[in-house]
Length: 171
Image (cartoon, rainbow, N blue to C red; front, side):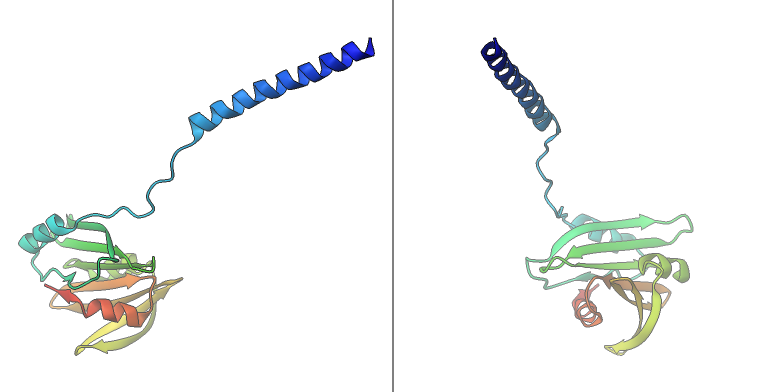
């Protein structure tokens, strides 16, 4: 009789494992999703053309970046106060982030938002223009206001790399 119990116990164990296995397989099929592409690349051309046609300031964009730079965001927005904002973001070849933002709106609020409420960190002269440096965590920013337009170049790169990016900007 104990042999029957043992056979029945093993059979029940195998059936229980099969039921659990089917349930786990079902969950895997229902829940599993392929990982999304880590960087969504966008073409900023249309937004850049619109910004240059409508903005009251010289809209900047980099020229001569290698194909390893990935444009991840581009937008041109009209603000409630009548000003406009241009934003262009990139992932660098080594996976860090660099962005350009410009506005002809109020400077203080814009700088605070774009620098992630960064703290002043000195200044530097780049091509005869003074740029204020801000730091917030691992983000550094270069900020300059000229002729009513505030330009912020920001990212998770060094100030020197931001200055190199600035050197590629053209209107």
